[in-house]
Each structure stands twice: as C-alpha cells, then as structure tokens.
Length: 196
Image (cartoon, rainbow, N blue to C red; front, side, top):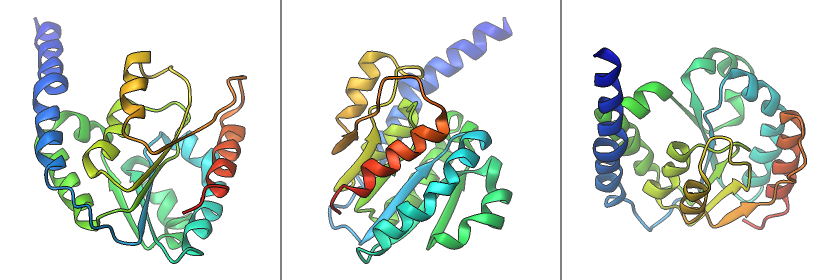
C-alpha cells in the first residue's frame, strides 16, 4: 500500500505539481539580462571532485569577458566547495536535490532567487544530463545555454530531444566510453572555444 502511495505521489509531482511551478516561474523570466553566468553543477560528490579542477578555466573564460560568474551547486558537497572553490565565484547557491524534485514550494523559492539574477548564460556541466536539471534553462530562459550532447543514461531519447530545445549550444561529446575526468576536459575545451 505504501509503495502504491509513493508511486502516485511521485507521478503527481512529476506530471502536475512541478510542471505547474515551472510554468508559473517561467512567466516571470526577464529578457533583460545581466552580464552574469550561472555554472550548474548538481552532480554527486564524486563527479564534482573530478570536475572541480576545470572550474578555474571556465570561470576565467567568462570573467575575461567582464561577466560575473555564479555557481549552482549540490548542498551535499557544500563543505568541500566552500573550502576549495567558492572563492572563484561571485556567488554560490547550494540546493537540496531531493527537495528540489519533491517539494514544489522549495522549488519555487529556488527559482524565485535564480530569476532575480537575470542570467545571460547558463552552463550545464554534466555529461549524463538529467531532465529536471536541464529544466532550469527552460524556466530561466537565458540568452545562452550550453550543455553536453552526453548520453541517454538518465533520459529517454524523447527527453533528450525535448531538453535540447532549451539550450542554444549542445557541445559535442565523443560517444566513445571515457572516464568522467576526461569528459570534463572535453566539455571545458568545447566551452573555451565558444564566443561569449
């Protein structure tokens, strides 16, 4: 009985409640942008540690263009980031991934805060993208949104095609199996050759 309840609760969240929040918040998106970039890194701690050495290159790339650079990170690795990487950014926001996908009021508050920044550019750093993370660009509607072509490990082909509509550039990712460390280098190189 409990499993059935949890299943239908998640269906209600995924199909009705969270899309309603996204739709409501997307109506508030401004098309007057600040010179601000949001780097989205909501992966688990291991992927963050493997990718973190590329953060200075991404941040410097955008700061040389006169942009402010913010990070949207996973609350689970806040302590490590505060100690090692937070100084790179003009602002860091951490979110609880579970709350963001299960609590409509929490999701709305996060989007309210992010919309206030009027991001010109959003950079999604994950190779294996997630539909709910890509939806951040759908709601915020930046002028530029970059993501990796990635794999379909976490999304159906239909979801990949849909979420591709929310990005202005899908960076090519070699389909050959590679370590996540090399994926980070591949993605970062792709961004560094992209004009701001």
